[in-house]
Image (cartoon, rainbow, N blue to C red):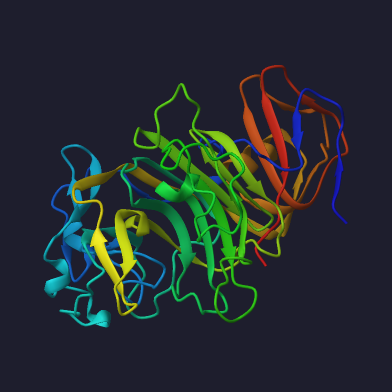
Amino acid sequence: MKKFVYLCGMMLLCMNMMAQIDLNDKNWDRVFHDEFTETGRYWQNWISQPDQKWMGYSGSNVIDGMGWYQVYQYANNLFCPAEGKMKIVGEYCDTLWKNSYPLPGWLENNYPSSDSLFYFSGEIDSYRDSTNHVAKFQYGYFEIRCMLPKHEGAHSGFWLQGADTCSSDAYYEEIDIVESSWSATDTMANWLPVINPNAYVLGDMRYYSTAICHNLHGQYVDFDTDIYAMVYPHIPNNQEDVSGWHTYSCEWMPDHVYFYLDGNLVNSYFDKTHIPKHHLTLKTNYGIDGYGVNRYKDSNGHYIYTPKWMDTDTLTVDYIRVYQLNWDCGTDELITCQNDLSSFILHPSVKNSVSIAPINGTISVGNTDKITFRVADSFEITGPFQANSGCEFTVIRQDCPE
């Protein structure tokens, strides 16, 4: 049974923390980041070198049958260290459908083109080693600062996806931290499982969506039933639209997922049945969807595709950062004196339980101290304890990974 027993003091006790994480909280470790300032980086065999942080392509097909009209190319992922930016370029190519183009070995190079492909673009995925393809991340805090492209057909995202990107995988899981599309304000867009009640004008690029997708059926993902927590955050009128600089972030934990825009909570989800549980790959992509093309049937009933958007645009990334908690869920922590408390702060983690039980004197929290305890089962204070004015003392009940 989870219990919280504490003496009244000047402290904050939180059953769940819904504010954006404090990156100075020593419970969190920065485990992955790219500020895009390193010089001498290049692509080799679709892997960023020499750091091997990113793959330049994902998936098992050129297009996945859901209305995408671009081919990802590592050459469209530009490292710009002088600016400290990654630039993912989407561009119209009037000869793409007539010619072959390079693809990773598992897709076979010079894959034949389709007459519905009109655009080159890019995607960067956190690198999975070539031996077992294990994704990097299970739970954590994920943040990007970027400027999204703005044109009809632009469909960009910062998201997490199962290591096997096939939607027929029984363990297919997905978290869309930010997904911006011309259709985000289209109440009739066929890829949306719900009707957006707050749609303005189609293409109002102050809207974007967040979502959780989890295949519970063991067959194909059904985008009418397997998408949860879809929401349409709206950037206020007095701010830039999504083509301006914004931070998009997500805290993914076993018992909750929080979504943030510029540090403000915009969506949350708590149904553990649908929250992804497996390791996921972090992705940033510049897709081009059906709003960038015209489609009609000829006299024989065959679909004919023509490009609607014929230009070049850029998804510009300032940084990508990932933080994860220290998990020590099998340990019960007994704090009997101030030195023990200090030691606990220096070696933070999520504990099974924490008990503050001073042997002699009073355990106190200083005026400027910021202390956060995360416990899976219980927290209690059974002796003299003082939280001084000006301190921040926080206790969070935190589920541990299964």
